[in-house]
Length: 285
Image 1: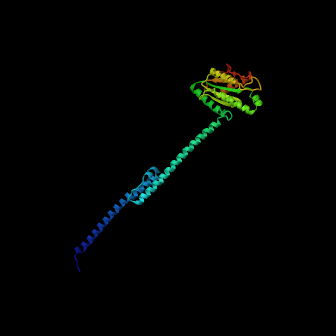
Image 2: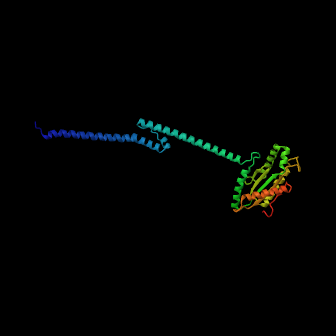
Image 3: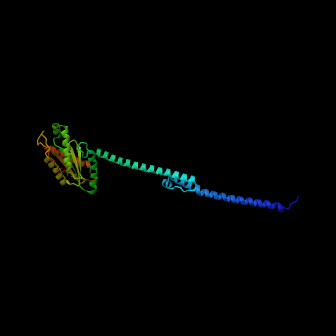
């Protein structure tokens, strides 16, 4: 049979157009579905992943998709937020613990520093604290061009007192003398320290030679007036021998010079009969 081409081609072309139309509609539908999926599922998940990768726990904890159309995304968002909140709570708790332990460590270090610079028997500063403070006061005196004084005092015939009364009485006497001297120093500026054995040393910043002599004599007289008894020898009370030195520190001088001069004057006071203050000689001023 011979049929016209138009009769054969027309149905085929119509079918092709229908196929193309259906394909186009399917393609548009797929695009719409893909966009919808991207908006409803992919983007929220991508946002959560971004916050997680950037360690943005605060944002992750606040990003809760409870009313999301996709139940799975809502569950995932809620789980991620719960995990982020738990981590934030753990971090906050850890930070509080670290802060608390740091404060405890600082207090412990302060206590150790205090103990390391405190004389165990008398409770006043020890030789280490004296050396440390003297170096600081020396530098301060250089900076401000002010005088600095060191007084060194020694309990007269303490070995005889200790041998006669015993070590417990000797320790009590040391404590009594330390407490007495402590009440006669300026709080906040001066320092009283147990220099060694029965010796005590004082640092008096911004104190010149005349003021130092008056301060030393006041310490001697006030302790003698308390009349701490002793029966092993006259004058029957505990007394002090004192030496002092005062100068305006300079960069070309050493802090040891001040201590050596005060110590030298102390031994002169002891050699001259004790219970006295020995000022620096004119040649050493």
